[in-house]
Image 1 (cartoon, rainbow, N blue to C red):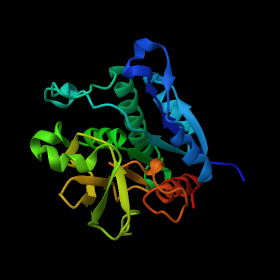
Image 2 (cartoon, rainbow, N blue to C red):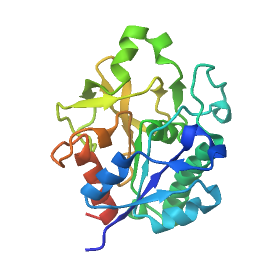
Image 3 (cartoon, one colour):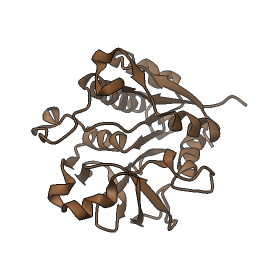
Amino acid sequence: MTLPVIGITVDNRENDAGSGIYESAIAYSRAVHACGGLPLLLPHVPDLAGAYVGCCDGLLLTGGADPVMEQFGCATDGRARRMDCTRQAFELALLQAVDDHRAASLGSSADVPVLGVCLGMQLMALHHGATLDQYMPESMGEDAAKAHINNNAHTLVFGHDDSVLAPSGQCVVSSHRQRITDPGRLRVVARAEDGTVEAIDDPARRFYVGVQWHPERGGRTTSDTLSYGLIHKLIESARGD
């Protein structure tokens, strides 16, 4: 059987393209391989976004630093850890290329499946008109925000039974100081018990899901539906199952 190719976005060492070195947490590639996919790391070349989308069966947008917000109409919070602008431009170009591919192919049958993780989810949402709370310790208080950092586990509240994220009762692990406040054109499908948006999707597409947690850090069996099981669903969709 030919393995579906899953393009995985990479970071820059020290969050700086000037370092001259890409890096990627091995957990992403390991999870894609374990779930039946062929992991392919994608260099930051915005002009090649369409070509990448054309040769990948699915995409996994990984975690990282914080979005630079000026292009979305507001100032970047001074406490944010600003992501490298080259990476941001590339990942937004990828998301636009996915949209263009879908439009050119006239419908959902040609959708390129996308899973966004943490930062990846936030970029998916911003691409679709979302708004972002840029500093959770201020907006919800230091103690409440601690539930979402340092891989702390917390439970979810699900809102739509037709999502690939059907209720499961499992905990997830997170590490972020920013959160979506309005999903724009996407749909909220899960929240933390404190109301923090934890998952979004586009129900009109085959598989277009963003999660605020890190599924690659969770359970390593496909029965763990919010961890390896979620990545397995991405790969099933990329394979056309």
